[in-house]
Image 1: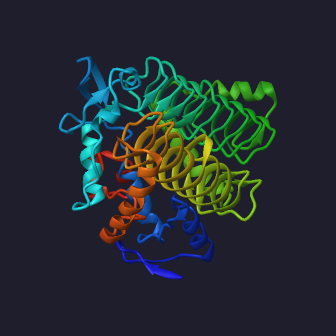
Image 2: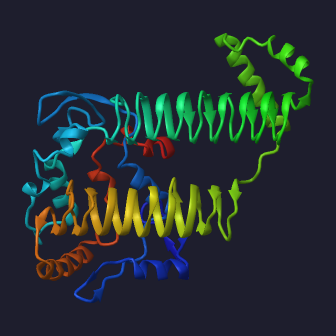
Length: 432
């Protein structure tokens, strides 16, 4: 069926498969299933709404609300949040349950959630299990990194975004398992590679596009298993090394000139695949690998029965998800940076099951509207309930949210913890 977006007023389609998905992802309380209504916004407006909750590159100086220690934070000083370091946030010196409160049926849920979120302390920059990575955000298991955003298992890397398993690299975007690389985009398993895009399993190449298993190549594109090539022309090793020595790669002005010339060369002569979809079945999008029934998905692998999923791995039955860990997610909708099962409307969720409308909860089960809770079960707005109390109260809240028009909707942009121009949404959906 066709629907009209409640924001941009463009038409979008809800398929029979979509309806089946929304019917099965809602919570079960007391043996009764509560389904999720189809979305009121089109996929692009839903994407914008989620991205407006994520600040990656705006950093500020703050003071820990617990220790007084100076911190680098993604929350500006004018924001109302208490800020803790990673070690403080995970310590036993505080308890998110101390901020619990009763649900007020005379008010909207989103307003109550906003007040709870402003009261609960926050991890200053969402840097987890990392060393000397103070000027990074959304980065984990890394060491000696500077201005790395959305990185994992990185070492001695600088000015990079969406990178995993890279070391001794500078200025990378969307690269994995690379070493000694500079100024690259979407490269995988490369070593000593500069100014390259979409290259794989290659080393000692510069200014190359869409080359695989290549060594010692310059200004080349669409090559496979080649070495000693310049502008896609084959040379002997001696000729190649002699010509390579003539280039002044260490000169900034010359480097910029080479890069501009290479862009023009690629635009004029290279072959650009319509999409990079490898070993996939019934899937659409780009940068997909080992996926089945993945519709309008991007930069992901090992997806099954997913739609509108980006930057995710090992997930199934998921819609409208941005970022899942390698452990993946299942039966998840309208979520960001998550890991677990049965998640709806959540962000920064790890190791959880049956979690709805939550922010930064770790290893929890059957929680609703919670912020900053760890290892909890049967909680609503950070307040502990018995199972019987939880299953009696949650249906009443769902009915209340149906009446206010909030049930089935992700958190509105108006309650984002960031200003719009601080967030990733400004990159993809700029408001001038």
